[in-house]
Length: 465
Ligand SMILES: Cc1ncc(COP(=O)(O)O)c(C=O)c1O
Image (cartoon, rainbow, N blue to C red; front, top):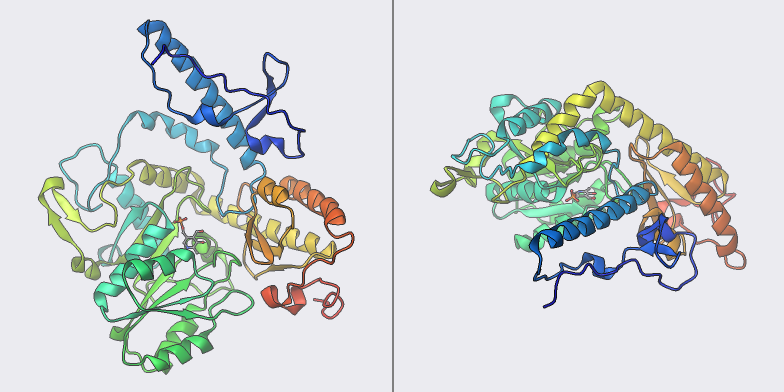
């Protein structure tokens, strides 16, 4: 192996620039020796093997090289965040720079959050502070709940359904077809029978179908996942109706377990007056939420809260960590509880409410503009997810980072999404549609989002809502 030579990464790639070159990690302001634009290329991401001759100069050169690449990556991320509309993440993250000094510590919250281990570099006091906040939000007393800061919504779901399975080992998992894919993965991982419940055009669980399926399996307990903000349409399952359906079908309290997956709308629903609340005052067993979605923590994280009396079912004393093994993961991110604690305190209830109101307003604005432009679209009441016809142009989809499903695409109007960003998106969409739909017709979305939301030539004039 030769001396350390930074690979020259800034190749020109010899193609015509496209409308959306920035997304290919092109840094427009940086021009290479050939006078052309620089693009981060595959070799930049390789871990270079080196056998340095002159240790000191090589280390300096190496650091310079790494810094340059990281700076370019940062520019790339900034550009991507400014056009990020699809996946539900909040990219207003600059206030977390105040916590950057914590990166010099390796913080690990392994084990139970309520049991300090001998390992001193943890942030469990912050973690418990965050958990107390969520417990209060979801109406459960301090001495009645147990929970932890997870690695995200999926881990919270894994824990919630595990709780249900341990309480009701023979239970069937019922979850709507619009549930997050993690639910179906969990059913496979835990080898649980899974009943997929149909959903309405809004994306909400169809409780008539739930009733039919519960009655067919009346002899087996029910473990039900209720989604508070479905992944694609932002629908909120009707928790009260789910409970009523269980009662109507003859299921007593000890024959069912309800987990609420509030990954996306868990921060939105508490601020809405007309919407029914999900709370531990109702017969639910657990709630999980993501911290990197609406809250905008810069690393995947979340919270899971359940009833304290259930946790003994899975808890094991582990001498090696001097703590209880009650969580899904072993080592746990010790930074994320501090980041959650920081943003909850920084924004406060008022700040969060302002974020929610802004997102609802902007989502309604987007939906209004799409409708006015004659584009099929849907926005559930009190939701921040706008569904519309899938653009038939992958480059456009990638540029705006839209999530797509069959005929549909969606924009999740998170706090970083400004009216200015929506305007840029709308003018790009409306301009490109003229070329997409010169000779062919836009798709019919009546089955996906309902006739009244469909603006295809057949349905456009049928419904004027
Ligand atoms: C409803 C719902 N639940 C769970 C998840 C998974 O969350 P995470 O990506 O934090 O694991 C998502 C992600 O989009 C979701 O939409």
